[in-house]
Length: 224
Length: 302
Image 1: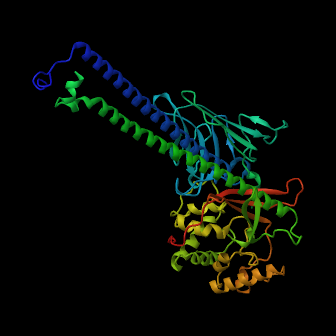
Image 2: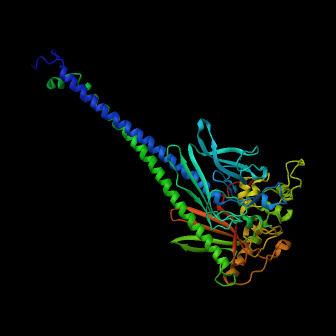
């Protein structure tokens, strides 16, 4: 037997072959299953961390801008301070105020900022920031923030399914106790709290953003 | 068969399964490693965000304490005076530095005459010719805008915009670069309307910006003043400031609170507060902003 080793290459039987193939295919299945699982969890994990860091960026930015809002009177009508003072103007869909922008994001100075939803291609909606330098500001309405002098709108978050602002406080002329309101018509006084709820296509949502404005709009505008 | 194959020259072919497994293991290790890395960095980001939020709350607490000190009567010997001195306080075991400065210790963008603006611009490193031009630009900018809803064509780019309403507006003036603005921001205010500054409380940088006051005079006066503050004595005005000296306090106070945590995370909040003296609303917040670290001296001015 030993002598014939090199000469007599005995073939594998069909059964041995099949068992070998079966074992190998099971092994491969396990290996690629594991690989696919790993890569898909990697994808999902990094998508999640991306989403969280984007949320942090956007919420930090909005928090800072909303709390730093400045009282500002547009040039057009210096005779009528009540009509042109831009404090916080808010509806359930949009929030508008004047605030300084960081120099990294703009050329610096005061901007009229409007946060709201815009329609994007494919029928999806995006949380968008419209900004215009106050020295060039026309007076675009809250419903239609686009202005020729405005800088290009900035998209802060895509695939938004629901966006809602609400305002806590007592607007001037109201006799109701402080409560959450869907609109803030009083641009002379700031609400005590501003809240933003946002939800995304696919059911995800961010924690509510709640900011307490500190600036006394009427006092700041009537400084001189 | 096994006996045979062990001696067969094609033995290495039988390691195919092992090699496959090893390769996949390497791949999995790389995937797991990079995933762990990205999770680690996002955990660090979250930890950083928590620390920043903590520092922010501490700084806001410092501002509230500053306002409380302002309201609790400036006459008491222990009261924090709005004279630009920094007070250290502890909150939750963390140090917060609170500086109260009456805005009359700064140069008012709307009230200051062109000569004072020119001297201020020179003191932050703008060359004399340029400084004079820029001061004229500022004077032109703050002039009242033409009535009639701006229908008249403006001559040149230098439009009149009316008084400055916030110091941020300075950045929109042609010729004011971001670097220059960062240098000017601590020196200027829009809340007093005064033609000069109160030298008794003005910072050394503001004193240097006055016409006729050299850095040496400013620093000698600041040292003398600090010694008088130590012994609670009255401080005389700086004589060299001449007509640019204003004795009155404005009652509008800038409250700067700087919180820094042990791990290097910090946050600075500056609020401008007007003390009204009315019991219904004893103070009004006029401005509320985050202060970024000052530029390093290496940055060249505009």
